[in-house]
Length: 327
Image (tube, rainbow, N blue to C red; front, side, top):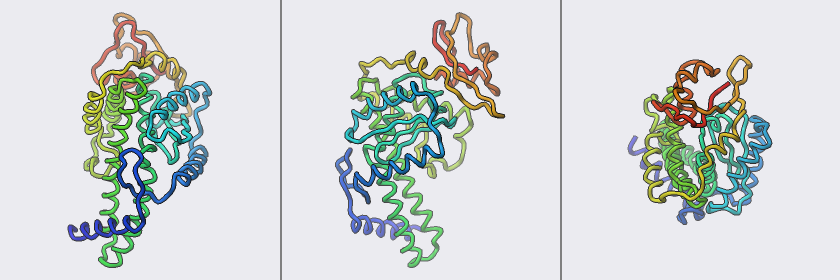
């Protein structure tokens, strides 16, 4: 296996030199890219149409405009701020955000429900903008094409195509983890440039970590090896270090503004039923066990409310605090 891995590396290096590299807009280093910027934008436009055909935009003009405004503010800070960025909220309960080549950025209604400030929203969008700025989509597609060629060559020469394919896939996924960490660093940088405290990116990762733990999504063996995203613990530690070097921000994090924007957000409950995000102000003596009794959340509702409000695992509301609930 070690011999095959070494040969695989030699073939990949040779192919990349043969096919050529471009300069990474962020790092200034050489990067494999088999399409021009114009081709990248065109590919993104086509993929954007495909995404919207399968995942319709969330039907709320005001919310779409709000997310787009925050997104454009963050895009203006990026290393490729000349691109025609497009931001779309998808009507999807999954907790997710992603980017396509050329500046097409998406965030789901499901993820919006778990954020708690404008600064956190800006951090999520900045992370995806970071992928676009560093041309990660283009590089990943280019490495995929090179990997297919290398796999074919080595399978013919060394046999055991399954092993060769696995080695190539693991190599590409490691590269994906590096890209995720670079996008995290760029998000912190763009937040600071826009005036937000980059520490709010830490809040985003803490929320993802809480959601992961609450839903039981973090216990699979070998997750760090096979996942294209680094583990939430690793990301959290990276972001804490990055946020500290930027210091505090001058812009209001927009906690109440953001919550007012997502009030009424619709989410599927199952069996054809729909619930909505509603706001309430905590009163003296309120706790999540009590608030859960009037919520339409089902299993472990009090803990779910903690996750929704960024107070997982043991936090309780303060009197006067604006909170999200599900009705």
